[in-house]
Image 1 (cartoon, rainbow, N blue to C red):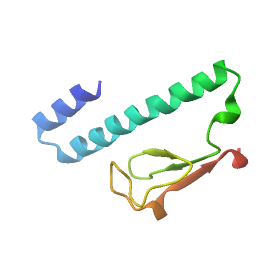
Image 2: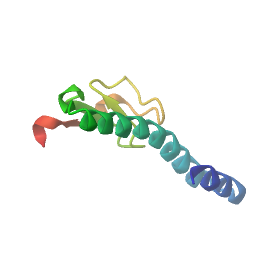
Image 3: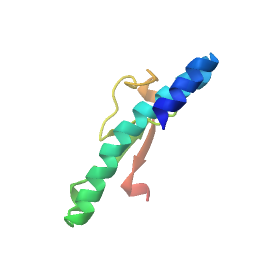
Length: 90
C-alpha cells in the first residue's frame, strides 16, 4: 500500500505526506523482520534469544535492537531522543 501512497502524495505535490509515507514504508520493512524473528522465537520456544532492549526513533518509529546508532538511519534523528523499550519495564 505504501508505494501507492507515495505515488499519490508525489502526484499531489504534498511533500509532508511524501516524507511521512517514506518514513513509514522504510520503517515497516524493518518491523517486518523484527516480527518474523519474534514469531520464529515463539514457535521454537526460544523467546529468551530475543533482545531485551530496543530503541525507537520518535520521529519515524525506526527500531533498533540492543543499541542505538548515533543517528536514525531513516530520519537522521539524534539517538539521545530515542525511546528505550526494555523487557524489564513490561
